[in-house]
Length: 409
Image (cartoon, rainbow, N blue to C red; front, top):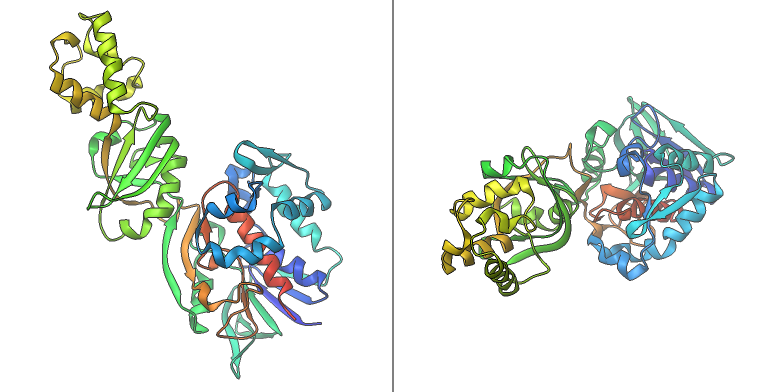
């Protein structure tokens, strides 16, 4: 039996406590907040999309950073095991569109309650409002933590402090400081799954407009495409957001930190420019005197129409038969490439997850133990691992927490 200290009572920390506790270890969780699972409460808009039922290969396709590192942990404790865990501890679950898994109650608190119930009967204690300031390192081994000026000794320490996203939940980057002091490399931290800011004032006039069934692409200065995805997006008071924009941020963050990027919206992805032009020509032949604005009724949302005509440079009241071939081609191109300049992303306060963290090359992928400091383990977002939306990030937290807690000898 070992004495284990876990820093953080979030998704990764609580699962690590369960795994360590069931292995017979004495576990002491130190949580800086006044309650456990504070970030869990706001995930999935308060409903907690705790995992995703995608098969293993599809799941790994949704992991953005270091999927190979996660292979062992995800194989050992996957969605089906997480679902069985929740069900066995009183939280019934359901599956929704895209394989997203939720508690059947739609209450995130039920997931936290199940995690806490799982610790009942185990040798696990939790101290709230308790902030760890340093690690105890002796003879090249982690021997415990320092908290409030006092030493708390243990055989193993698990850092499960989360990242930098949603700092109001207690994710303020403390884990990175502790890891760096212990000799670990911290891969550059960036907000991810986060909305983007645009340069053009005209984009801001579309605030509140939602687009469905469009393709969003992002290009670097050389014209190389960095990202392309079909789905839904939203214009905001600062730029763009929505599912396909948030996903884009996970792939372009590093490049965007170095230069502005061009984004393009294909408003009619089902048709190429040639097919779209033929459609317009058919409509013109059927109603040659029809006003230009009326040809776009089925092609554009009403709120986008005004800006579209400004960019096109034609009058909405003009008869389409009086519009030149070159101008018509320009309209078609604008439908297929409605572009804007991305100047940056919003900050950690609006980011769903943190990209970057403790370099996984310095961590044993099977046990989550540090390769640099025996006795020190990591779990969850504090490591340089992240994925797209859809329950993947929480499952990573649970899987790595389970591996860390179970990796202590």
